[in-house]
Length: 334
Ligand SMILES: [Zn+2]
Ligand SMILES: [Zn+2]
Image (cartoon, rainbow, N blue to C red; front, side, top):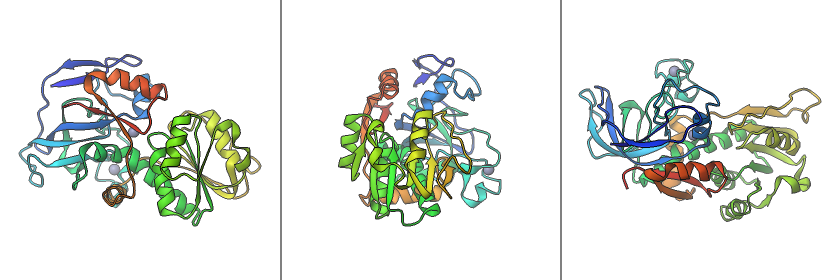
């Protein structure tokens, strides 16, 4: 099969012919039809953090495809089934995993497809059968991006609403791959005024088309300072966190979702009174079921830019350069 290999931190990916993977008894082999590109992939390639267990590595943690073969002990799935890979793969045994909170697994072994073990930047991948989710009629490309971009943004919105019910204003900082969904969830699941803070003119326009009530560049958002009940920061750089904290009103929630390396001073006088600061890490299987239902019902739509596997470095460069509207997706078998 063809795969995009990372030979070391900071390097370009190398598309090469490698042996087809062989499933163990509890795994299936998936023919990967779509795999999303995530900012996390850029962090992993850069070695920030340097958490990959070895090289060459096959990244890609947002995958969907068709079952090609099943291990001897797999009885619940059939060859030919259209499946997505649940990404926040926990140990399956700890108290969090057994409460459908694998995204908060206490073992934190980072053994997920595309992070601790081979992922979807390849024509074929092996997946433990317990991590499969039926696409249920969703197109592979859409199902793939919903497993992270669509899921993490959903959980981010739901967690924030849980901490600050009936928000009047929700700010989405960064209207990219995840922000595109957060705008739609905020618009349809709340009655809040939804604003997007986005420096890129094309993405700002896209945010409006998805239902944002207004957009602002980071330099020109004085009108909304101190006015937001919920702020979702999908970038979380030093600059955006500093901005996000100034958007909060008393009693507001700031949810840090992006993996930028920004930090924020927290103290009684550093934030509005009774502000809550939290993070969101991926989502649960129950969350993903809700996301798939919303997508099937037409509540959320995915904006996607497709690339063949051979163009994966160009796609990563476009992601790094801020040239993607929506989510970039690799189609390894097209
Ligand atoms: Zn991701
Ligand atoms: Zn666990």
